[in-house]
Image (cartoon, rainbow, N blue to C red):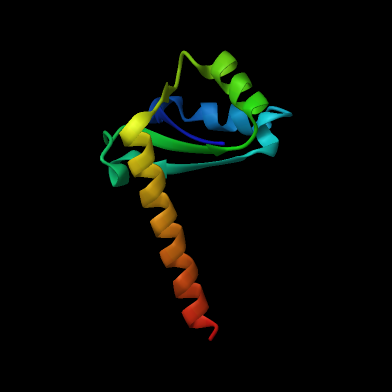
Length: 97
């Protein structure tokens, strides 16, 4: 499962807290600057890929400090990230061919 969250830059330490959690830290979590995805300049995008159990821990422990995106906004952001990753992989393939 993949989910997208938004956190204010002043709360950036939440990302480190997530990564240090025993269960959540074993999932894939990475951050992107919000402005690149049509969010506010003071927002960070957190992309989570992992188990439903870990997602439940995130909602329980940090739900009051993060905003979970959904619907078209989440889908558009995930599509944009996938496209960026595909383009990066194609570029690396070009370098080594």
